[in-house]
Length: 398
Image 1 (cartoon, rainbow, N blue to C red):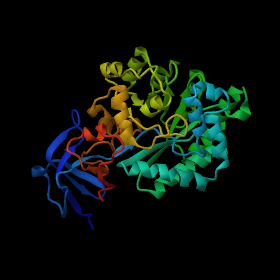
Image 2: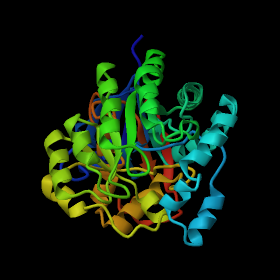
Image 3: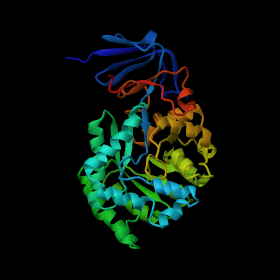
Image 4: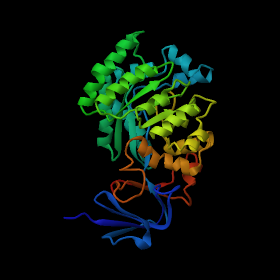
């Protein structure tokens, strides 16, 4: 028996499919079997079995949070206090805080506890119209703990109607038990951890943290080579605290994205443009760390680099679980336009996850994941702070 066709009528659309937001006044969406059959002017919509009156509301693609660290144990509120007292992110990390402190708490937590804690964070995102989220590992830094994190991430996608993409971030920090044995840890990542986790079907992509307090371009390249052998796409935390040439490295591997990018130079921008690498901007970390050097947005525009925006939700540098607030931060702190913010959380966020053919715009053939908003214009989704105008999140057309 063929699935029913549903007409979502009397709506205004921001399809995110054309130039700008692809606005359609007097629009409609037709869905069937979890897919979009039509998105455009209501007068041109095909017949349907059932109609839903959207009462003039705006419909956008469901939002996508393309960079998060939702799975972790504990919190880092104490470090927040230390930063308020003047300590830098690097000083905290070198004193045994930062990522390593979360590693300890995450290793001690059970898989069930990690799932329960993360569900609260995920639910906050879903309540704002998010239908897809990337979740990184990287707070385990040994095989059992990284496996536990990735398994927990997969379980989130089973517990909720949300698409979860998992990213292996074993090259996040040097675990304390390795001391200064950097090469030995990279050997472990490349020879044991990544092949094992990929073989278990737990890894959708591979990431690394390229920074003076983390891993060099040479070390990250070894991890990326291992990912390439396994047929996995890569992405990179790059140029967050200094310019290490990470964005150019990511471009040389055809990465899905390079993320943070506060210290990105024009050569790195040009390399990303040539390779089609998405720039994922993370204003939550910029805000929390009280950074003063913003990503080179004008250079990204000039070279035509696609810009995505994400929460970077994590316990230390971006304890943020509101993508709508993130959009306001991106506009206020980085001077993105409304269109850039909304496309950055839909079409270009999908591209940053390798999902552009499936999500991110209202187009025939894509998954019927979209959001209905009680707003008068799309700018309200960026303009308001601490206010959620979501009327309904539609998952697979229902």
